[in-house]
Image (cartoon, rainbow, N blue to C red; front, side, top):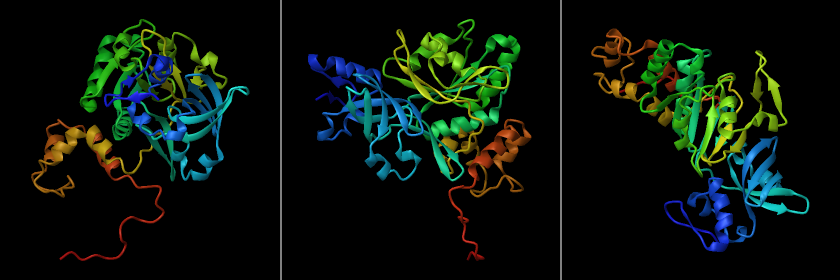
Amino acid sequence: MVECSDDSELSLTAAEFGLAHSLLQLGWSDFFERQLAAGERSLTIGRVFAEHKHHYQVHTPAGDFPADLAGRVHHHAKTRLDYPTVGDFVILRVRVEEQKATVQRLLGRRTALVRQQDRDVQLLASNVDTAFLVTSLNENFNLRRLERYLVMVHEAGVEPVILLTKDDLVEADEAAEVMAEVRAIAGQTAIHAVSCLHRRGMEALSRYLAFGKTAVLLGSSGTGKSTLVNHLAQADIQDMMETREFDDKGRHCTTFRHLIHLPAPLGGMIIDTPGLRGLTLEPDSDEGVALTFEDLDTLVTKCKFTNCRHETEPQCAVKAALEDKTLDPARLQSYLKLQSQPDPRKSQPTRDPRPRTDF
């Protein structure tokens, strides 16, 4: 048995070192160890590194295996969240002679990045420590979209880090202007301008990708996510994957999510994801909105009325900030829109439609 201490360090015997070292490398911690039942300790622990329609590729200390789901997993699944996704830890029964495995159980997630899709949800990645929010300095730059990414990541309890890529393709003054715009909405979030071509800014990413850590790349197509992965992995990862396609500018695009182990001196893991064409947030993302718009949350507390709508009310701190240009009107609209977004999972209105009289 491999025992864990409260600080997520594994306490090992010499015989267990190889196994535990491999598990730690995969991101294993006390959080997952505590979930193991006595009868599961004879089975194999693995981490999902690729997934396609309930067929999985799984890293284990004994090697990598293709894996399908046991019937019990299907039987107990109620929503998409009950199925494994890239980054999940699973309990496996491995058939070594066949070089195949069956997922017996999905372990609880430490973190999960989720977006809304109509009345369902999509899991983008799980058990990640850091989310790199990737946007290009030379095209497709959108502050409002970046705010939505920040809300989703904050809501998941994951550390966001903003990466401004391709800084070799813009002039220094233009890059500084964009950086200032991002800083105005980012709060305490770290921001790094990077160039894989000139290796500028890349050394700053190493602390997020240390041994046992997992990061995920999120952003639109064409922002340079795959180039970043290739640079960090010291290999052309896309050439190693079977599923590829080109975007409208002839660039290779990632078409499915996969988790990649990074070589020394990093030693961590990174999840590459396809470009997201749209990002609809879960309706109950109140904590993510509050953390992303902390400046506005503080500002509204200074309004005279607690139910101020920031329209015609007197002594409105928000209106005052708009008038003295310390608040961007577009940021306010983004904040209000995210606070009032409807819940697509509900077919009926949430408010009682009957007339109401307040006494």
